[in-house]
Image 1 (cartoon, rainbow, N blue to C red):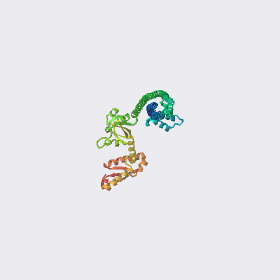
Image 2: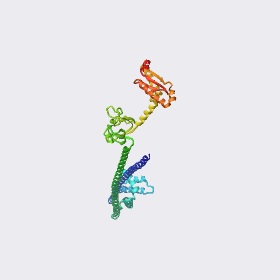
Image 3: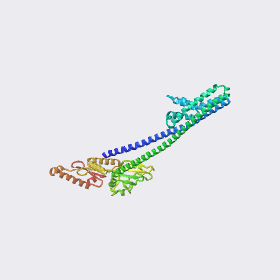
Image 4: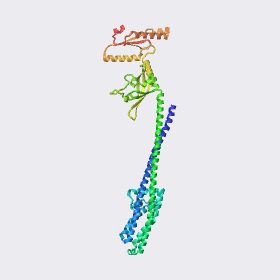
Length: 464
């Protein structure tokens, strides 16, 4: 029992260690997948920022071109086009300002990004990435450059409002027109330079995200591979240890153990089984279950194969020893299916022949007189009841003789009880020798005997 507890204590840490490794591997895989998904989302966001910067630049350039046309032609529609084109970069500006508030206004930010020409499905990515990654690496630099454009954008907006108030006739004067053209040109140069720097920062950010994605992906594959290899080695080690313990238990067990295939052939047998049946173990492993069982003990199906569902039911079976003698074995077993569907049967056989012998001896003592060996009163009554039932159902005549030894007490008193016992045994042997085959003699009491003569009339009984 102590050794079993010790093995249990050794087995629990191994199982727990394997479980911990499995949980760690699963958790790490989930974490790495989540991190990869986050980086991929950031990569999608960086792509959205680059696309948004393109809309920003086109809006600024369209506004500059419209202002130049207005100064050249004085057409009010050109001024409206400039104001409309400038709403694209201004929309992004208003979205950023809404997110930079102490309490970000997500509704205004969404509205601003949509006015900036950004795709509706990209707006959530833009908001999320700006809120949580604007201070990281290249994104921080891009944000700083973006903020530098605010002054010039607002200056261009103010210039549009100013031109809206200038009479068109004044713009026909070369000096006035050239003044405004120079202001537009200066703003355009500033904004284009800042837009180029902003674009380069976004490209560096996208490159960084791609590198991070590759690193995380490679790291994920490496870690998961290493953990899987470690887990596989641990599983292999545990299986080897379990196999070793099983084999040790199998071959060192004090009860007989057999490993059988689906046809009942012995694949392995331990020494205890060989001792029970008086075979060498190598000889036993060349035999089949049918060779080891007495006739009638092997359960077959309609096709003549072993019916393992019934054969494996626990019970006591009669085994045949090498010399043909009977051995009673308490049988229990289980079937194990392999991955390929093959069946292996593991059975345990405990020799209970001594129990059967003891049971027969107890039964004999319960029904026989210990002094003479004749059946006792209890067995006599049972046999008479059976004979009466036979007569009632089949008819016929039986005879029962009652014999009493007169003056038997004088033998005990004169020569002692040992002499009396010897006399009773001798008389019992005489009676047994005097009756016919199939008849029986029993002892009713101290000096009282019963003789049953089957199928005998009174005259026949008297002659016997």
